[in-house]
Image (cartoon, rainbow, N blue to C red):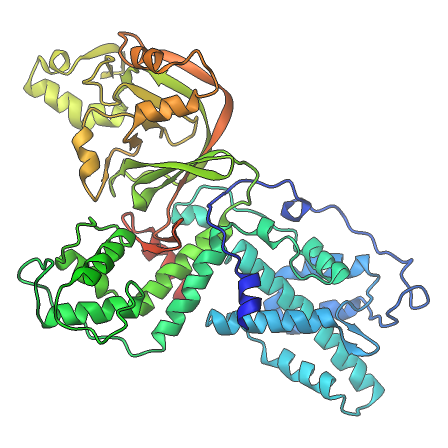
Length: 540
């Protein structure tokens, strides 16, 4: 693929929108398709037709396309079984363009799963126009026609929908988008454009991450440096040594620094900038010093990074397309919340997410309520595991922690914590009704936001700047001044505010993505979702 084609195919888009489109290409419901008998050799430009029974015969032999049997029949019924990719002059321009597109994908992505040697042989034989019997020619052309259609379905399903995996088994509860492959193929054949609405079919992060995958596949073809040993002391600006030379070479290899001249053993200012850049994009504290945490990240093999990118590309394929310009996105492994307004990034905010034992769920919802000065209705599990044992040790535990019993469920007390600066939810919470009992909220433990690993909660999302977020949500109501918001956050009873319109919230799980500055980021697989997904994707 030349540079112009690659630039067109992988457009540089910098946002991460994730919402449902009303475009019929996304429809999961299929209406019955009737055969269009008005299309005949006399009425059409293409006088090549085949018998409907040939599809069944073809799919019985080519079982890799069997999952698309319904799409095959629907597509060709609408054409009265007229050829789509071949006419009397041979392979159409659309056919050749699609084959080239797929071949470029296979080469660039190093993905042999879509390769079909039989199609290549048939295509070459048609292009060479070798003289053969009429019946043999017709058989060859029909096989080529159906193979191209099958490859189109395979390629489109993989690219736009993702692999046939049960996302819920992998902890992903955001509804996967559905693509109408029949309509997609019909549009491609009718317009001559293979994917005229590609930007509405894929999440915008897809092209960016795919570009980085191509770079890393190219890196994997180069010799990789040896694993670096741990350092006995943290390295700083001005230090020197053989390890610093190895680090410089590794950072150059990864693209974090150009270092035009041959790297030396000195920790200079150019290395300082490269170190901070690498630390930033791998989730380390960007202090410019080199310790063993950074060395461990530098030692991650390129092939492992490639798999990490592939796993996250798969997740991007599952995401619905955009239909909302304002939304909140929490990327759990990043420990950050991103606020988008009119499709533009507004600001980021540090968050604290659930521990590995109390993981935050991956799902989407609509933020509808702000609750100022909230009560904390303590979950029964926490009452059983933590509070009741504490009450047994200290009869004054509830009073000391500003809690009260509001009733009983059998012998288990129903406990809530009173509003105030001591409240575990802080001074405000933000609700998006869901089945996982997860919401966004403030916290009295402000110091925890300074930690680099913020997997610390019981599952809910603690946000670093709750007052700022409340002001953003109420920005269109002039009566909610800063003073009024501050007052609402310091009451003795909770106050509910219903937002005039629900705001989409997505809790996602990406350990590899491209940020607004175009930098490829990696994060730790804090819940083990990557590990489980890797087993499904690569070890079948």
